[in-house]
Structures are given as structure tokens and as C-alpha cells.
Amino acid sequence: MRRKSPYNAVNGAIVKALQDIAGRKNVLVDAEALEPYTHDEVVDLRADPEVVVRVTSAEQVAEVFKLAQRERIPVTPRGAGYGLSGGAVPVHGGIVLSTEKMNRILEIDKENLMVTAEPGVITGDLHRAVEEEGLFYPPDPASLDSCTLGGNIAEGAGGPRAVKYGVTQDYVRGLEAVLPSGQIVHMGGKRVKDVTGYNLIQLLIGSEGTLAVVTKIILRLLPLPRYRVDLLVPFNDFGSAAQTVSDIIERRIVPATIEFMEQDSLLAVERLLGRELPFREVAAQLLIQVDGNLQETLEAEYEAVAEVCLDNGALDVLVAKDSRTRDRLWEARRLIIDALNNESPLNHMEDVVVPRAQLPTLLEGIQDIADRLGVRIVSFGHAGDGNVHVNVLKDDLSQDCWQAIVPQASEALYRLAISLGGTITGEHGIGVTRRPYLPLALDETQIAIMRGIRQVFDPNRILNPGKIFP
Ligand SMILES: Cc1cc2nc3c(=O)[nH]c(=O)nc-3n(C[C@H](O)[C@H](O)[C@H](O)COP(=O)(O)OP(=O)(O)OC[C@H]3O[C@@H](n4cnc5c(N)ncnc54)[C@H](O)[C@@H]3O)c2cc1C
Image 1: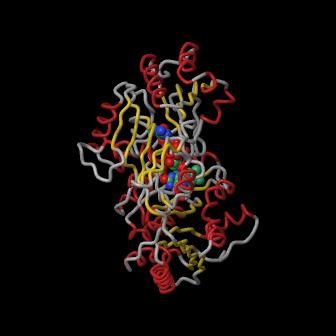
Image 2: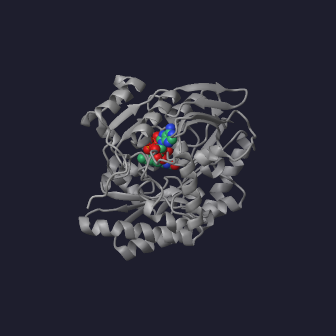
Image 3: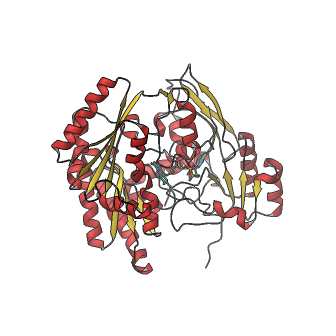
């Protein structure tokens, strides 16, 4: 027997009401126009929205919520749809609320080192705008030229520079958000300090669009570091590469990034590009960036980093001091996801995280899982944070075999990460894909507290249902 949906269907009157709120051209109903909103970047996960509304203000979001409450229609917020856990996929249909048109940078405040922006601003555009003023917004998800600030906040996004500079949650100082009730709330501001009551800003960060829709964002900025040097370092075995990461930090040097790429991922990039990359025969490479304001200090730091690498068996250290060479060194890292999609259109990405020192054990364990299940697993990612992107590839496995292997591989990987003091996702979130596994990572009490918080924000469950909780 089919379970009755707790929600009503969108009808012509609701579409008309949305058109009155956001304007006719901002309400999409044709199948062709809706198609881009049926998925994010999770391979093989799709659901149809009944209508998309492209809002342009907090007041419009509030009106959409009031309508959705009255009519009992689910609302799924969406930034750019570049998520990797299905957060923006409307699994219960209803309204997709897109912030793509709220894309203005409202103010760069050089006196307070803060920027105020709308949620639909593309992260890379914000980077470029503040860098023109000699300022720096460090969080740099690899998807930065596509994803939005609102999506970054909802997912608590990280990126390669997390090693030294932290992640999105370390930069958000103020938020305007609209609650499912339609109330508009202003939290925080351009203040460096604030301990007034519970920290609601941090509660919204990483809440995956299940508590409120963020409509304005105040971010803390840093002065742009004056110098950067990038190092590409090949190793003959990935245990040595992983050990090098811990050894660098133990020397009390904190690079801006330490990225890890194993040979299989680099060979996939070669096949995508149709040409050879440097050090193609090695088992693993580290891509390390050091930055700072004093050239002498920086040189001493990168020389010390190179020394640690060579002491750990690095075969060479390629150094890039200008942007052309730097782009060449980073080219392969940036193309890995595309290359793996090209290699095996059906693939499954996990993003487990462990304490940095456990990285060698994690990588060994991943290899064991691949051997045991007889599946190809390719790893790369943010070694400096202990956060590894683990890609299970279908290649030429049968569909039945693939469907049986993915949950086994995911669960084995989660259990491994947890046993090493880590957890099941470092930056991509729970969304739809990791929902069944939340109880592996959190105990009943924590899940009950989280459910209670959601109940306070959204007692009628109209906001992004079907996410996070099993
Ligand atoms: C090639 C590639 C590389 C990636 N690299 C990284 C990386 O290095 N680090 C990293 O952390 N992630 C990475 N990601 C994942 C993804 O880019 C991030 O999760 C990003 O933050 C998603 O932003 P988005 O605008 O695309 O959000 P969407 O996918 O549109 O939405 C993501 C979630 O945010 C919610 N949401 C969106 N806007 C709002 C809002 N205004 N208010 C409330 N909720 C909202 C949605 O409901 C959904 O739950 C990568 C993805 C790809 C495809």
C-alpha cells in the first residue's frame, strides 16, 4: 500500500500566489525549466519539484513560507545545486526556493574587515571582489566557481585552505534568515566578539537548509597574504606521503593547504586531458601551499617543508612561485572529480574525516576495503585536515553488483573512520545519501536534541523534509 504523503500537491492557485509574490518570470513550472532543479551533484539521485520560485528578497521568502504553511507544501532551499549529499533535491516535491537571483555583494567594509552579501553570490566571485581590495576570504571549496555562499553556510563548507584558515563557520559573523513561520531574524553583526545568549549563527551553519533560509550574510575578512609558494611532491608509497603530513605539522609549520592525490586519480586526469602529467609513475603526490607576508619567513618555511618531504622519501620537490606555474601544479587536483566522472559515470563519493595523525591508517584501511569488496576505490583530498574524498567506481561491475557494493563500501568506510576517532562526513553533509547512517556517528541523545531543535524551528516540517534524519 502506498503511504499517503503528508503534503498537498501544488495547484494552479498556489502557482498564481507564487507569481504574485515573486513575479511571473521568477516562477517556473514547465518540465524543461524544472529539470535543472531535479538534482544536485550526487550521481543517480533525482526528484521533481512541482514549482520553482526564484526569490529576490527576504520578504519574498517570508511570503513563500506563509503560503507553504497555509497550504502544507514542502519547501526545498537551493543555491547552485553543487551539493554532494542531495540537500537541494526536493525529495517530497513541492516548491524549490532558489536564491540564484539574490547574488549581490552589498558592501566591502575595509574599516571593519567585513563583507556583506546575499546568499546567491558565487563564492569565487566574492573571493575576487575582496581580493581586488587587498582582502582575503579563505574558505575555498573546490567548487568555488559554481557554488553559492548560502550553500556554503548550509553545508558548513570547507576547502583546501582549512588546514591553516579553518572553514566557513570560522568566518560568519552575522546572518539574516527567514524562519519557516515567515519571521525574519537578524543574528550577530559586524562584531568580532559576541556571547549574547546561544550562538544561533553556528546552529544554522551546517543545518543543511532544514532550519531557516539564509537571506543575508556578514563574513569576516583577513588581509590578503602577500606571498604564496606551491610545492608538488611525489612519493613512491602513499604511507610516506600521509606520514609527511603529520611530520610537517609536528615541525610547527602550518601550510595553507596540504592536498593528497593518489596515482589512480592522476592517471584518470591524464586520460581526461589526453596528455601526460609530471611524476605519472608515482603512488601519490602532495600539493602543498605556504603563504605569508614576509618573503624571508616564507622561504624558510617552504625549505623546511621540502626538507621534511625529502626526509620521508619524496622523490623530488617542484616549486611554483608564479601564478602560471602554480596553475599548472593545481590543474590535476582541480580536475579529479571531472576525471573520475569521465572514467566511470556511475561512481559514489564519500568524504570521511579523521584526526590528521590517523591518515596513514585510514588510507591503508580504504585499500583493504577495496580489496575485500573487489571494487576500485580512488582517494584524494584535504590531507592536511584528515579529510579524504573516497570514490567508489562502478567501472564494468554489473548494476546488481554495484547496488550491493555501494552501501557495503560506505558502511565499512564509516565504521573505519569512526574507529579512528573520525566521522562520516567532513564537509559534504548528511543530506539524503548519508541519512540512514547518522546513528553510526551520533548517539540517540544527540539525534533527539537535533530533532527537538528542528521541531522548534519548523513544527510543521515544511522546510526541506527528508534530509539528515533517518
Ligand atoms: C566538483 C565539486 C567540488 C567540491 N568541493 C568541495 C570542497 O572542497 N569543500 C566542500 O565543503 N564542498 C565541496 N563540494 C560540495 C558543494 O560544492 C558544497 O557543499 C557547496 O557548499 C554547495 O553549495 P550550493 O550553492 O551548490 O548549494 P546547494 O547544493 O544548492 O544546496 C546545498 C544545501 O544548502 C541548502 N541551502 C542552499 N542555499 C541556502 C540558503 N540560502 N539558506 C538555507 N539553506 C540553503 C540546500 O537546501 C541544501 O541542503 C564540491 C562539489 C563539487 C561538485
